[in-house]
Length: 113
Image 1: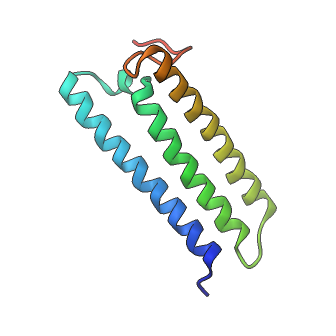
Image 2: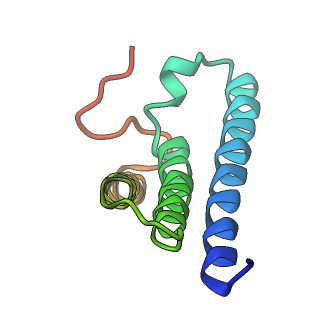
């Protein structure tokens, strides 16, 4: 049966996957425009911030889906929630790095090849 929480969980993970695909599409366009390889683009906050935010939405939707399941499994809820928190922290770090050093500077702690 369709309930409001199950609808919200479906919307979250579908928007998360759409965001991942949109980020990959934008990164491919930007990469070809600036003639850079994928290895260098995945280190940029320009890519990491929306990519990790989209993965946060996806993992949050999956966690909510596990919670609203008729027989919720604690390990699924814990795993998806942990991944959502990790991606949210990483998205926040990438966004702060982009605001500080610029969106085209490699993310702190990572070297550009």
